[in-house]
Length: 140
Image (tube, rainbow, N blue to C red):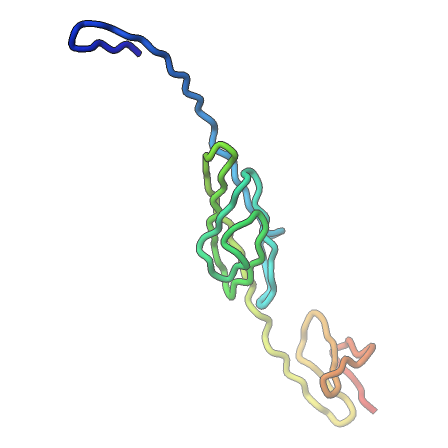
C-alpha cells in the first residue's frame, strides 16, 4: 500500500491477510429416527464451539453433544465456530415415527387375546408376567 500526504511525501507498507476456510460442521443422531417419547443423542463435529437453535426439545443450546426429545418431526440448526473464530452451520432433523395403534385385549374366560402386533408382553396388576409374550395368554 502506498500513501501520499499533502506535501507529496510518500510512505509504503505491506499487510498480509490470511483467509481461513470455514469449518465443515456435521451433526447426526444415529439414523435420526425416534419412536414417540424416546430421546436421541445428537453429536456435532467439525468445530470447537457449538450453539443450537431453537432451544426447544433439547437438553442445551451449546455443546457438541445434546439430548433431544421432539414430540414430532423437528429440525435444529447447529452453529460451529473454529479456533480462528470462523463459523458455519448445518441442520439436523429428527423424524418421529407415528405411534402404534392402542391394542385391544379380549377376555374369553380363561384366555386373553390381543389385537395383532409385532411383540407382546402381558402384565398382571402392573407387574410383568414372565414368559407371557405371545398374542394369547391363558391365565388359570
